[in-house]
Length: 314
Image (cartoon, rainbow, N blue to C red; front, side, top):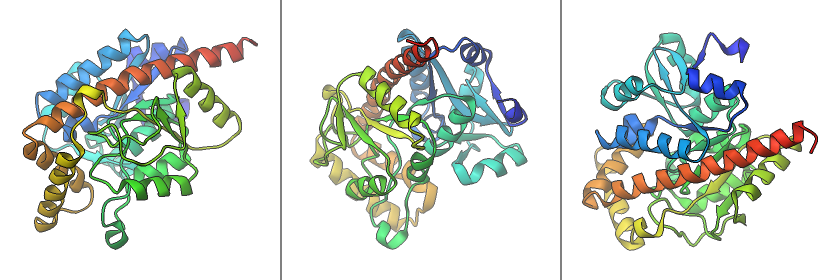
């Protein structure tokens, strides 16, 4: 961490947690600046942090404020991200430029993984990971999240990959990169707004302790890279797959007609889907991120306990 001080700053709460070796959970900030409308974005971000604290872990929402990687945001910084329009969306390629130019940025899954690793945080909670976009055989549009998962030692709790993606190809890419995809109390890879996709996960896991043991074994063996823990959206918020796929197809067609490309595709599609589902997708999005936060905190707690036991020779 010392050599990184010029680029990274941790809140007092996060610093104290690191020093006391308490369980920490990283959270992304793109959900605040690009993923949800105001005020749902700030309300959800604060509620997620509260849930993690209630589970006995310390939340660390990550963003870049005035060119500084900031791990653990204040209420004022969250409000700024929630309202300010000129927030860059940062992935791996953007980090050195944003830091040098001293810009403000929210962090994608890939960037949050990098920043979490720099801060020594091994568990990260998000809504859904990026992946292989539909039509990628023509556009080559594949999220940098997948490559980051192949190289960065951070466990990612998500409700699967975003439903707007090509889920079978996303799973194939992850297999090629050697990224384990675990299903928490499920045999199928969750499809973000819906609990099932018809695509089997690599392995089913039924407890946070089992997940923590897998993480320990992977990294003890020197097998670099992350692990995806697919956590299905709660049953009462799971949307009808036919309704959702219809909305996605319409949104994709509109994105194509409007010439939306690159990193603008995902927020455009999510906004259109919210409109087409009369807000039902937003309620589902909020429910699944809260559900992921609960699981992420429990995994962080178990992982922290195992590491302490190992250090103490148990």
